[in-house]
Length: 120
Image (cartoon, rainbow, N blue to C red; front, side, top):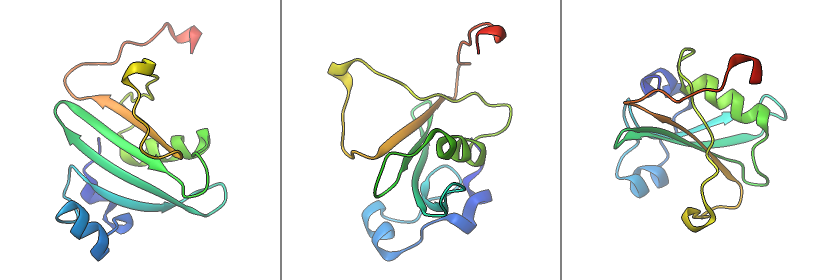
């Protein structure tokens, strides 16, 4: 994941965020607000890097983020040479806290296996 200090112009430093998270984050975690390239409305992002995983939670207030918006966030928060993924876990492992949120994950200690290039 990129250093989140590189994205400070988008960092949410509001008192509500600072109180809820006990601060506004650092180079590895934080809350961010960006404008969608599709409709210019706000995309909310919570980013973290801990326990061997980089994780970005992406949400809109009114709908699930589109593929293009997820790609926009991926390009902003991860380096060009990093592979990241969305996961579809088993139903028994699924936890839904917010109806309009999607996640991007990247393990920090192991590469993500990829299918042959011609399959992608």
